[in-house]
Length: 122
Ligand code: FES
Image 1 (tube, helix red, strand yellow):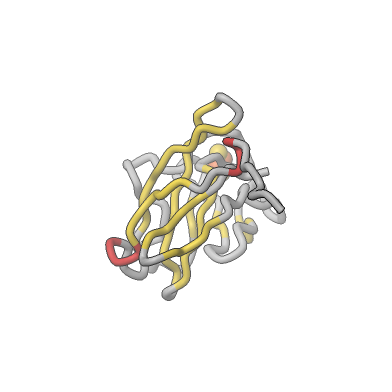
Image 2 (cartoon, rainbow, N blue to C red):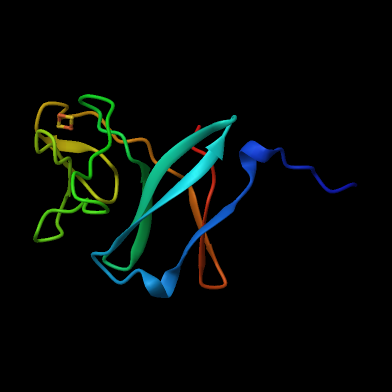
């Protein structure tokens, strides 16, 4: 059987080194998805990596008023700076604020050889 050819939408893109993201740290990155640029961020939550599109579920705008500041001071939640919505870091579910019950768009990640790779969200 031949190798499957992955289309560009399925491509894994390196976005960070695992060792540059300590627990409680975040990093922004950009993906090219269907010819559009998607802004996203990856975070280390208790040693596990999660990534989301940088777009609040309340009003579709970016959540970091201060560049790359996505977490509450205690690093317990992702927080939208505009109206203070709080999201669970490991699921993206909003647990407080205007869009409660809605979820951030998760960006699929793979960690390979110490490198965090992301692919376009569906
Ligand atoms: S825009 Fe994020 S809480 Fe309103």
